[in-house]
Length: 117
Length: 109
Image 1 (cartoon, rainbow over the protein chains, first blue to last red):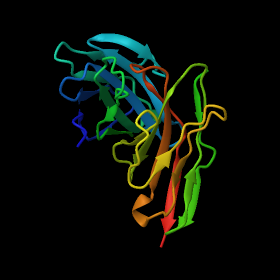
Image 2: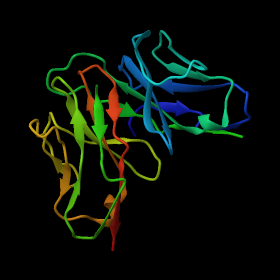
Image 3: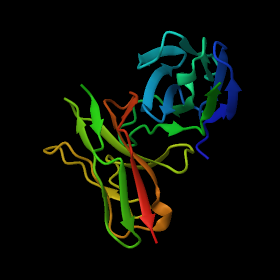
Image 4: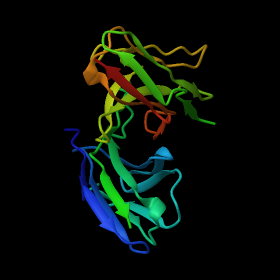
């Protein structure tokens, strides 16, 4: 168990709909990352938050948005869903602090399976 | 540009044979390199990181800055090693991971 919790584990929704994926990072971790894993694109970095602020943005579509709340949990909002958005969405967390020797490891959750029909 | 290349989509070996999963990277500074393993589309688990130079489940990886490589090796493959292996790069200690496309390792009995 990595300590990163994601809900829901599975979600089936129709095209055009909107869903919210939730992530609770490991206790004490300030950084949260979202990744999308699809069969054709592999693992794509979407966005990173650090202590409530957006830190880095990757290949995230404009239809997608995310935020990190004061209690450090994060939500990924996916709207106007298309068939191609079907994927496994991972949340990950790390301490976010500069750690000289430990490498500041990124730990992944179990993922949320999204199927758009 | 930051990039991680895993040239093999699939690597199939017999149990007991040596395994080498290739990873090359492109990064202008001093990156951190990692190997993650994923069993049956479950969560990604950290296998190795170059900073700690540890050996997990018999796997080792050495960072070769001259060849910009971080190949994963195991002298004797086991059936339970069958999984997807991802090489990843991190530009700084607080940055995100850039992943390669992954290599599926299949160990046959």
